[in-house]
Length: 465
Image (tube, rainbow, N blue to C red; front, top):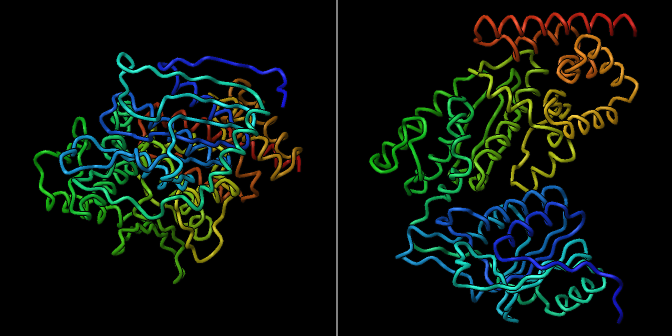
């Protein structure tokens, strides 16, 4: 069989993981990965294997078809003496619902990656943390050839992976610290510390602590204390549970929000309404993955959607001590909170929708419009045009530009509720929720200007209907 013209590229060991990560990010349809070794350890200072796992998880969330297969015989298991070096690559992919299989036969001696049935990356480098390239040599090649990809896939299909795959979960021995040193890892630590005064972020960290305490294992953080309350080396398990329970009790007193945990350690976040039936999301105990910031934002999405739904039905609004950082997180959540992709999040990140009525998914546009991110803004406008019609969205965008030509998307955020056909009174309520916060005088003046501009904009839009 003859091949057409191909692109062949040598990949050095030092750049291998970066190249693989980039190819995964650019995948459009499918990713097939066959590995000799698959080991992601907590003592890897660069976490390159972890970054590959994150990239695969995000690709899977976007609908890419993924299959990962690796040798069971070479998978490094924990031993009683390996408390400080934990290997959990398989666990992370399973938690994220990414299809992953372990096989005993045939024994794999190389690494093969096939992307979109056209790009083949083949070589000897395993997915293993802490590789010393001074002592080990690996040869890796990228070949852009659909013909070769088809041949390789035929070989893989002959393995009967479904029949040879090992079923069941790994039972790790030794102490297990809930992946905490990668939930809060060095790469994100500065960002984490800058955000740790937010109520919801406090809640996120304490849920992690509660989960670990419930498992009767200590929650270890590799770095400075978080919230000045958690000292992993000196506090006892009993003290940690007291901290968590006290904090959850405090959060339970927030208007509209209620937090519960069952015997399986699932977290149920409820919205309290005047009705006997309350909308809620149930988050399984294994909800938290390995990326603190992404987990935090996702938790905020769930809570925010519930707040939005209950608020529009009851006219009640919760009281948060929400600072500028937290508001910025809400504003940067982008388009994937809309219906189709929210369903993906529910399915792939194990969030179980258990609400008694359909949740309102018409999320305000300020979630998807970010003037600093043109791609997200354009995507947001495209979704709005699809939902509400191009003429109406363009009119709102044009009117917003009359007040501020440099930041038209900022004002479109303020008029989005008009597009969603809410009354002016309802808009005022939302302004009160979003903007009337404990701010200094300069911030209040700025917010007041935005509110007045938005009112003028509503008036103009109403007059043109």
